[in-house]
Image 1 (cartoon, rainbow, N blue to C red):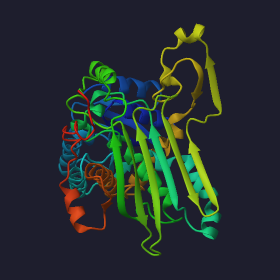
Image 2 (cartoon, rainbow, N blue to C red):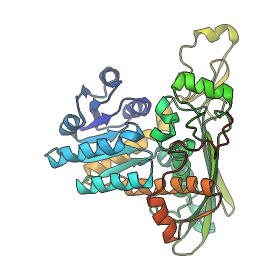
Image 3 (cartoon, rainbow, N blue to C red):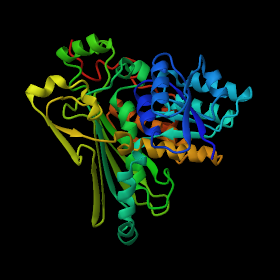
Image 4 (cartoon, helix red, strand yellow):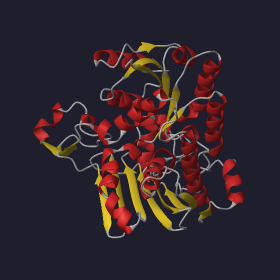
Length: 416
């Protein structure tokens, strides 16, 4: 089988993580990269690790003409222009099998709809990258509990959390460029994986219908003067002027379209989780059965004492977003596989070879964007958002949160 040539647009944190995942994906090579910065470094990594002769291209169009599929790993604020350039290249003759977009699909519902429109106009097959749905632990839990679901009924409550001490780059912290704060950045993960596990066995990812969202957002750590200054000095983002939430929690209610049974998905996300590092937590409760996943539980632990701590070059070699380099440390030997990156990449490439969308396509990404934006609307209006109301759907189409507008100092109670 001839290898599929995949091109990366963007060479930042997520692109590097996906390159790690590619080492475990058969039949795919990294054929090229276009990025404002980091492209040469990613190309060198690809060549050194046998991922492919990754060439650095001067434009999106040139990359698109020389690969079989492209993955958009560039910042949120650049998505519309990038996907437009991909579509133009395809219309000009580039033979592209498909295009991947990292979460979130859009910063607003309008942006997500525009990306879906552009892809359809160019007849592009799409993959929406939401890695947690592809986690082996999640898939194994559902498979193991399949007989219980059939006998007792589907899961009725799912709870999901993604938490760490904060993003790597300044644009993530800037709500006007990122599209919000932690709800936009990580709430999309938690909402999506909960929706997935609540769906009855064998049903599509969007089978259950979202009917209501209730959410709260807060600025708990990074709005305090000491930490605002740290953020300004380190990232160049001033939360005195344009703050974003570092904590979000809420509930999405789904309804089974056949039985009318309602189920609940609870999500919690934060950028102020000052423990070992990134934690993904999920559990699901059904009648008489349950499962739980916690990525901070590892078969490997190491201990580093004070005398030896100076030898640690990079704490993140142990765990993403690690905050400590000494003491008893959780170590995940293969994070790219643990978090589902390998499986989502395999799914997308297999789908593109077969001439179809991935398991999660951009229409699904649009629905996740709607749910996140409904969360922001709920937090602003301090009420439950009724997603069955056509007027609410119309409001969401044109909605940009106060946080994303950079006007949320009062809402987030920023103290001067």
